[in-house]
Structure formats: C-alpha cells, structure tokens
Image (cartoon, rainbow, N blue to C red; front, side, top):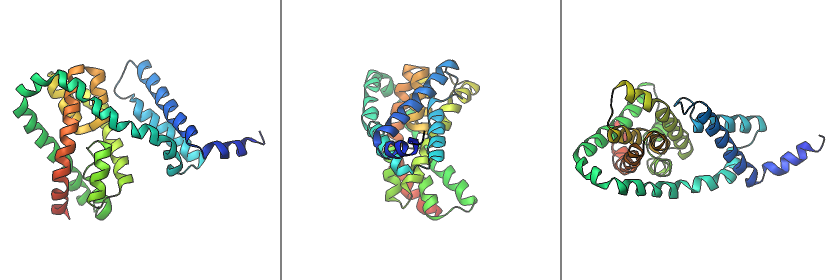
Length: 238
C-alpha cells in the first residue's frame, strides 16, 4: 500500500488509464440502462459523466490530463456522425416527401434553441464570453466548439453546455413526446435531433430506426443553420 501513491502518480499521467476509465464508465452506465429496462432517466451518458466527474475530483486530476486519453473517443465523434448518413440514405424517399415540414421545423427549432438560451441568460445578467458560449449549445459538439471559437465564446464551456443539453434532451424527449401524443417517428426523431444533437440521436435510435434516421438529419441540418444564425442573433443580444 505504501507504493500505491507512486503507482497512481505514474498511471494517472498516461492516456491509457483515462481512456480505459471512460470506456469502463460508459459500460457501467449502459449496464444500468439495460437493467432499468431502458428507462430514459437512466441515461448511460449521464451516469458515465457523473462517475468520471467524481473520479477526477477525488483524484485531483486536471481535465487536460484526462483529455489526453479521452481524445481517442472524441476523435471518433466525426466518423460516427458521418455513419448517420447510412440510415438516412435508406429513408431518403420519406425525407423528400416531408421536405417542407422538415425545413419549417428546422427553422423553428434552431431559432428557439438560440434565442431562448440567449434571452434567459441576458435576463439573468449574463454577458460577454459566457453569453457567446451559450448560443451553439444545441449543436453537435465538433460544430458547436467551432462556432463558439468564432463568436468569442469559451470552447470548454460550450462543450459542457452541449453535453448537458444532449443529456437533458435524451432524458425528457420520449416522455414529453408521448405526453404530446406525437406518434409519427419522423417528427419525433427530427425534433430530438434538432434539440439534443448526438446524444439525443443515439436515444432516438434506441427507440425506433426511423426516428434515429430523422434525428441524424435534424442534427446535421441544425448544425449548418446554427452556424449561420448564431453569430447574427448573438449580435442582437450584445
């Protein structure tokens, strides 16, 4: 036991430990999710984030050190996003038939996400870098971080907000849509993708393949539209 601090000091500096911790935390979260019969509140990403946060806090590990290992998982976000084109291609005829409603929903969802976040923050006295960091919070992480950098926000804060938004959306989407009696899987998936990006899309795939395909479409289109409108709307609030 007297050698444990030295062993921990050696392991904590290497990327392999934190990569393993990330995978183990998600595996445990997914096991809890399955044990709870896939209940939305038992979200595997939420559980993984909580476990890793506790581990980093009590080990006094800086985020930069953790990210040296987690960056390998982060890199896979890009290829995973591209893979969403496969189920979308299978549903292309259905997308064409619903093109106009989808565009209307996209515009409404994107504007609501940006304007509501900035309006609430402004009313609470938030300004400057923090305000700018809020604008792209409903966009998938790689795009949101790029938008945040371009408009003067904090990429780190934006990344945290993106994760919180995705987890919240994944947890509340199914109960809320059931409460609203929305039964069309295209509408359910698209709304979830626009509001909760990648984490919401993953949840949509767990519920129904058509919902997952349209969630991927919503996530991608929302990323493009947010990149265009977020800087303009932010200037109005500044």
